Amino acid sequence: MELRLRPGPVRAGGVTLSNHLILAAGILGTTGSSLARVLDAGAGGVVTKSIGPAPCEGHAGPCVIELECGVINAMGLPNPSREFTGELAILAGKPVVVSIFGGSPEEFATVASWFAGLVAGFELNLSCPHAEGYGAALGADPDIVEECTRAVSRYGMPTWVKLTPNVTDITACGRAAERGGADAIVAINTVKAMRISPELRRPVLGHGFGGLSGKAIFPVAVRCVYELYRACRIPIIGCGGIATERDVIEMMMAGASAVEIGTAARDDPAIFSAISSRLYGFGGEDPDSVVGCAHE
Ligand SMILES: Cc1cc2nc3c(=O)[nH]c(=O)nc-3n(C[C@H](O)[C@H](O)[C@H](O)COP(=O)(O)O)c2cc1C
Image (cartoon, rainbow, N blue to C red; front, side):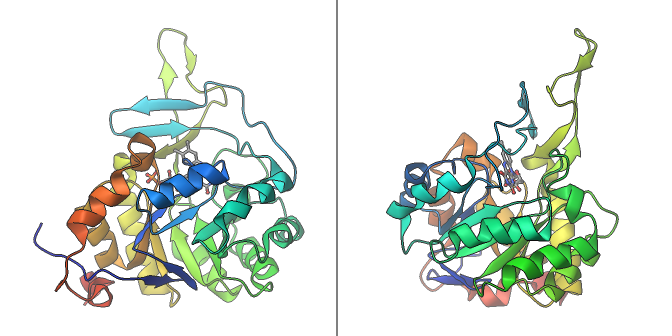
């Protein structure tokens, strides 16, 4: 592809990144040293595994199904809760965003309070499709999105809100995040999905259903980013199925100011430097002129 972008720092939703490519939540982000390795491997920023109000082991396995077009996971938000603060010391001053979840605005505020001052920003997981009482269970209701966002944005730190595509109108949730004081919207989390084993005559995943990620959901993510760009004024961070520099450009043309990469980085952490080497070039185009240009 001919189009190249001018390299340089990127400001997205109040966070300064070293390029447009961010590690998505839940992929290679469970320890401080794995996050540091991904930054060293060329990511412009990283999002941690989602951290909640109490330690949790997650769902019974199998938790992941590998498909040709992506992955279906039902991890069930396993996390060490407050203990995770100890992982962040080696990452001080780096573009690290902590993904947090809770079952109410109060729980979101509590978890955020543990991390305020330790990270560059918050990403609110209001979108996980397979954790009862959390994630998309809250994030499908615009009023709750607004309340949870307000409960965290009052800390005055950059606050990103990650939305679910499993709703009729994602723009209603995007506008709610904006009203609650979000600095950016992240779109999208996984698409609710399942497979059944004909041999076993039962669902493959221990949890039954889970969330589809990877190449299969890229067109869904582009559509969501496009709709959100029309409906909202705050920056949008595109996520879902991105695996090449062409995907990054397409997401930016739909309206994304930066992108997150999950499944493709799980397969190959070197993807950040590989995409960067083909995406950027001195004398390249101003990234701001590419963001949202498909709407003109
Ligand atoms: C194994 C796995 C674990 C994930 N864990 C989280 C998580 O803890 N929090 C979250 O907000 N999203 C989580 N996600 C969703 C990703 O961050 C991302 O939104 C989604 O996979 C779509 O992007 P992708 O197609 O590039 O993977 C997870 C995805 C996978 C595949």
